[in-house]
Length: 295
Ligand SMILES: *Cc1c(COP(=O)(O)O)cnc(C)c1O
Image (cartoon, rainbow, N blue to C red):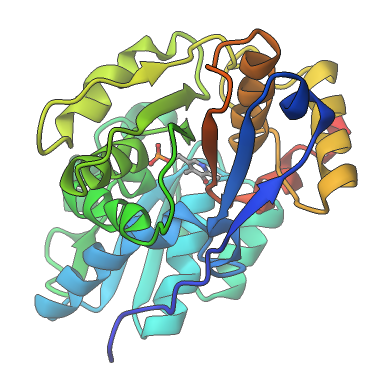
C-alpha cells in the first residue's frame, strides 16, 4: 500500500482590529484539516516513519505517549488506515479517557506503565517486543529526523513568502523540520517557536538536534501558562473568543498558547509594520477532550 495522504492545508487570512491597529497581516496554515484523526503535524511526522516501517517489512507500530497524547491517537488512526497493527505504551497507571477510547476504537492495543519505567523507551520496547521481528519503534511524539523531514514539506507547499512563521513546540521536531524547509527554499522568513512547557529554553537544543544546517530562530518561552496541559482563565477566554469569532477550533495544550503568544506580541508591537505572519495550525483539537473542565 502506498503510504500517503493528499495534503489539504490551505492558507487562510485571519482578520482582527488588533492586526489593523499594528499594521500586520496574519495568516493561518490549516494543517488541522489534513485528517480528522491523523491530525496536522502528526501526519507529517509519521509519514516517513511509516514508509521506513513498510520498507523494513515491519507491520506492527509501537509507540509511546501520555494518556491524552495526540501522537498516540494519530498513530492508531494511521496504523488502521495503512494496514499496520499498533501498540501504545501509555505513561502512568491504567486509566480510560476520550483520547484512549479513540485509540482503542482504531484497534490500538494499550499497555500502561509506571512513570519510572516510562523514561527508558528503548528498554520498554526491548522488554515487550525484543523478540518480535514485526515490531517497529516510534519514539514519543514521533520525535525523529524522519519526522522533521516530513514537516519540512509544509514549507514546500507555500506559494507566498512571510516575514515570520509561528508554531507551537513540544518535542521541537516540527520546528526543526520547518526551519530545514526554510533553509532548503532559501527563505529569509524568521521562525518563532512557542514552547508549551515551563522553562522551555531547553527546546533550543532539541530543535538543534534535527537541524540540517545551523539556523537562528526566536523562542517565546513566556506562554506556557504554568506548564504542559496547564491553562488559566485568560487563556480559556482567549480561546473561546478566537473560536467564536473565526469558526476555527484551537485548544489549550498547543495551538491556543501559540495563538495567544502571537496576539500578545502583536499588541506589544513586537513586529515591524507591514509584517506578514504565518501561524501554523498544527491540529490536535482532540486535546480539548482532556480540558473540558477548564471551560
Ligand atoms: C504534538 C503537537 C505539537 C508539537 O509538535 P512537536 O513536533 O513535538 O514539537 C504542536 N501542536 C500540536 C497540535 C500537536 O499535537
